Length: 72
Image (cartoon, rainbow, N blue to C red; front, side):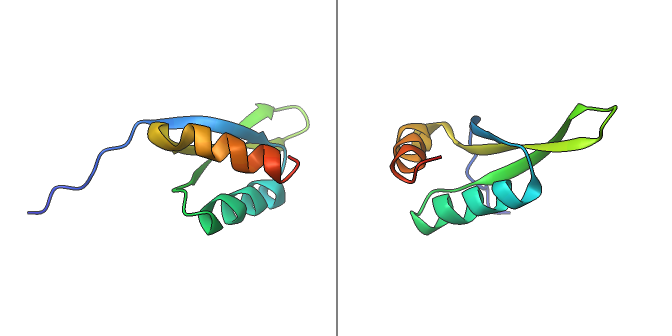
């Protein structure tokens, strides 16, 4: 059995919709950064969906640079 690489994931952005989260994921992926999304629900009364955008700990600085460069 092959062992996969284990990453420590860090939140680099909180998106207030699935659309924004998907756009952020596409943006970071195009820059060669591993990305995953984690849905959370911050306001159960209005059921607004929020998403954490996570990258491996080793790519946090690069992800932040891309996010700032693209104006998010």
